[in-house]
Image 1 (cartoon, rainbow, N blue to C red):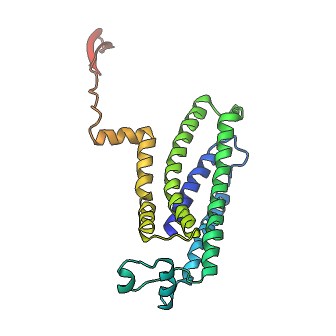
Image 2 (cartoon, rainbow, N blue to C red; image 1 turned 135 degrees about the vertical axis):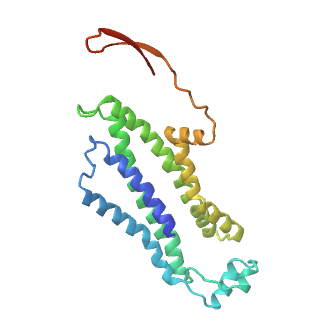
Image 3 (cartoon, helix red, strand yellow; image 1 turned 60 degrees about the vertical axis):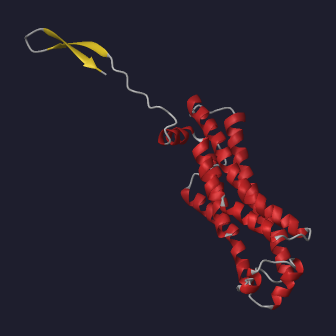
Length: 242
């Protein structure tokens, strides 16, 4: 959960930095202390999911409650110590159906705000005199890359827990689906790295060079006559190769 909260914060900081890089954005945070305070507040809100770790228990009586949900668990359920996350049903429902959606909503709302500001000032609002057309074009290309870079990991972070919460709310529980969801959740780092390497052209070219997918171009050699004065001897002729 801590890894998911930190990953969501990294994606959020990436979006907010894109928004703050636009000088025409009237909502940009110019002071460093303001940005640090803003990002710290979002981080603490996301890390509040760890508070529910204090409601874990290892009581044997909870095994009977777990067997009511999943009457055919794996053999490790009986052979190994089992830790139950939020044994109280009321707290568990509050966590799954209120707190987690609330955290997802605030992260999504902040991200949408920065996306809206960035898209508006790059594609809708007229450019100011201080921003050149080349800078605006480069910011648009980088924005598209950032959208792809952030959307792919966000989907891998959000889809598995949302699917599991939906199935659990319908009274359906399957350990295989839970394990599969955790596997997809753990692939976030790999998916994010692949997204960065595939979205931006310099990274793509570097990967192609490493894998020898591109043939390196040999430098062209040309001979250019150059005249130079050598003391009192007059003009001499030499050749410069580039």
